[in-house]
Image (cartoon, rainbow, N blue to C red):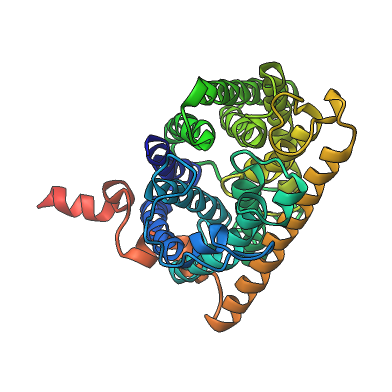
Length: 410
């Protein structure tokens, strides 16, 4: 239950991350829609999502336990309702990651409808394949806490959205160069990373589902080492390449380390956790630059932090999973397991990533036709979504100087 609360609290971290990484005129909108979409996702997960993942069914999907009643789980000294809340939190995080690709230009109505569609048609099938006894689970897919299930799934939905929505107004010049739309509050962003870092102990260590023999502490230690490795690596590479220790890149390095270690935290030794995080920190730096050159406007770097790092983290167990810790699947390449587990991991990445992207793209394209576009008008985007979608600014005293002047005159 504590772990479930920690993971749900990560939604607050994502609010600060997305708000701090974007412009002031959209701050209130981002905060409000995140709470709203998590609420929608919660109801949908209770009604059908949980059953599609963990219900009795077939290797592709679950077909029972809809409108979940919270019964006790046979064979586990764990409340069914607590397990439900824990899994709900993961689904909510994946949905929040997906919406990073919508930032600063999507209609509020699109968020509402896609929350339902993602929570029924995109997240549950992938979660069932790997965590619900589906076909990838039977092959021995190793994804302890969700580098693929949660992070890559959300990132692929975000990629579909960024392609269909197209870049924000003014992001790219005619010569193809990108303008830096700096986030309005770097302190928010740093605080968000700390909140997410702490919440990740619920995310990863909580996935042990037990305090028996203290294994959750080992998983928490690996989680912390992965995050630290990612932070340091991103700082070093940005300093070498850019000549400055870039703060946003350093923060993205921490998150990429956390994402990467999520799949492998229970299967690898501590030294490997440091290596996995360190490589993730380097990858995220070059991934962000790659997507920017390709004119894919990703305001909070969801594609790189959750997509690229999610791919690496899932692959990493195919290299570093030890004989003693590989309770799922087989040992990795460096521990005598050959290429088998690496192949299983790659298959899981390809099929899950492709499914999430293709289904998201189709659904969003249909919504684009049915709802007369995914994006607000040019005028609304320039004004900011705070005002155009909600009628008030997140920072009214700063963004309405004319009203402040009137008040002072009175």
